[in-house]
Amino acid sequence: MNTLLIDDDPLALKLLTRQLERLGCVGVQQCERAEEAMTLLKTQSEAIELVFCDLQMPDIDGVECVRHLVDIGYSGSLVLVSGEDGRILKAVAKLAQAHQVHVLGVLHKPIKNGQLSELLASHAARKTVPRRADQGTFEPAELARAIAGDELIVHYQPKVALDSGALFGVESLVRWQHPQAGLVYPDRFITLAEDHGLIDALTLAVLAAALRQSRRWRDAGLDLQVAVNVSMDNLAALDFPESVAQLASEIGVEPSRLVLEVTESRLMKDVRASLDVLTRLRLKGFSLSIDDFGTGYSSLAQLRDIPFDELKLDRSFVHGAAGDASLGAIVEATIAMARQLGMKTVAEGVEDQADLDYLRAQGCDVAQGYFIARPMLSADLLRWRPAWESRRCESAATAA
Ligand code: C2E
Ligand code: MG
Ligand code: MG
Image (cartoon, rainbow, N blue to C red; front, side, top):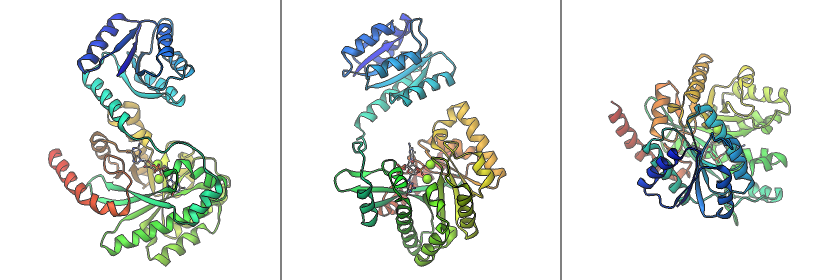
């Protein structure tokens, strides 16, 4: 692996090189001046996979360094190193991500061997993960056909109670099984559906599939609360609550078993209509969840105006909150506020045991994330469940 270190302090360079070599890295190159580093990167831009960059150097700071990496089209990963305040370090990382530079991590000086080896492991893992299907755009007519036909499929991701670990419900996540492009994720077609008047048909298709699945689970003795994502655009149709209620009653699912997760990714077109629709959904007995809380327009104003009964903490606050004072403060305050408002809290993006333990200690109610399970086909859920049961018993035994 070709690695380049940029730091004005020769001692820091030597130290980090030695640490990396002990961890099995070969071909570590060093630059004391950023200018020199950029020239080197320009000539070897394909070969260098990993750049460690100090945030504070006399000729250039971290922000400028990120800008230069963008200008030369650097396509590898970046590790930011600094003795600075963690929040500054993270601000630079965010900036780099906004420029589409992949930030593998941030390291505080003095760099610990454990952190370094974790970073290298995640770099290696990243290289072996197949990337999602190539980006490209789809035609609205093609999506309309997919919705009307049978190309949309629904994956289910488990939500578990944090106190007992018991399976509590699932979130339904739509995918498009495209005949040429393969499995396409919702970030590539939800906006398209919203922009071309297809979102009502899409939501009803997902709702119908999820309700039927919920019925099948119940018939098999598994009583799960099923969540479905609804777009803000769905709430412009005043008869949306009636359509949902009719579908649920036809399929034979109690309204209390359905949660509608509302994300507001853009400004509400018609505030009165959505308030009307959301309130009537609650009156009909459905649950309402505010999704991605803390990002975009999912904010305190929504909590004030709309009778949500569940709050989903956005994953950007969840993963790593145990070891990060700023994230921790946000998570703890949000949980306390939700409790005072009588709302249930769900944390999404739980990616490791530390996340899970931390959320449990903070009194969060429900957890969802890759650490528990990835979204999966309904058939796989039945196989996942016993495996999770034994995992949670093991973890309870070690915790005790
Ligand atoms: P969301 O509702 O916030 O769903 C959670 C997303 O986070 C899912 O991505 C899920 O796969 C992913 N996720 C779950 N656990 C983890 C984790 O531990 N780490 C990380 N990094 N990610 C995790 P997905 O399936 O790609 O869905 C993206 C978004 O698309 C959803 O975000 C939701 O807003 C939207 N979406 C999905 N299905 C539908 C749908 O049927 N209708 C509408 N309107 N939107 C949908
Ligand atoms: Mg959701
Ligand atoms: Mg979310």
